[in-house]
Image 1: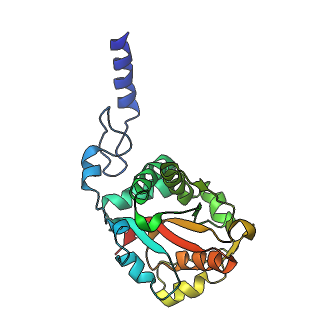
Image 2: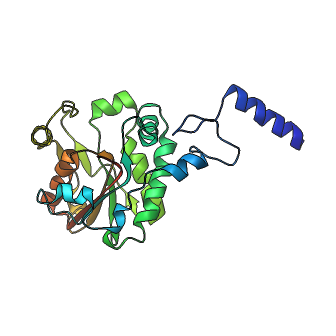
Image 3: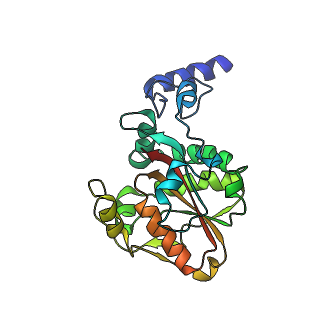
Length: 232
């Protein structure tokens, strides 16, 4: 019976290969989603350990954040980009949960991220959500919340305006593009709370700035930011 199960597993592996979401090579039986080599090679930032990291500095003076960090460096054509592409465009929401778990493991003992009340993913506009079918940041937030034992809520913050692409905009134009895009539902649930705002990739931080400002204006006591990756 054991040989039959192994043969069946090998046959399914040939027909439907289980590939690493970072490098595209076949996974061994004990590997899940990301191969051991890619996990070892991931470019971790360790920004959760330092209040004055590059992500936080990028947002200094723009809003009163409690803390900000990203777990990985994002470089075009590299493995982190492959992971996030599979999460966002290939339906691999399980990659988001796995990476969120890894992020949550780092945040749980971090001094700056103590006392968080609610984890909130950066929302998509309903049109983009309908096209994609899911919000990738929700699955990252799920992984973080599970590790930290904190509630997640994706209804408190909504995106009420569909914005233009940010890709070719300057930092100022990105900020102008994002102003007044987000609104808070059930503000009574936000007042006095420490919110962890979660996104996939930080570039200029304009989207997160707009989200955090909406939460703080509604009465949140603190807003901290955590993302999977930081685009240098």
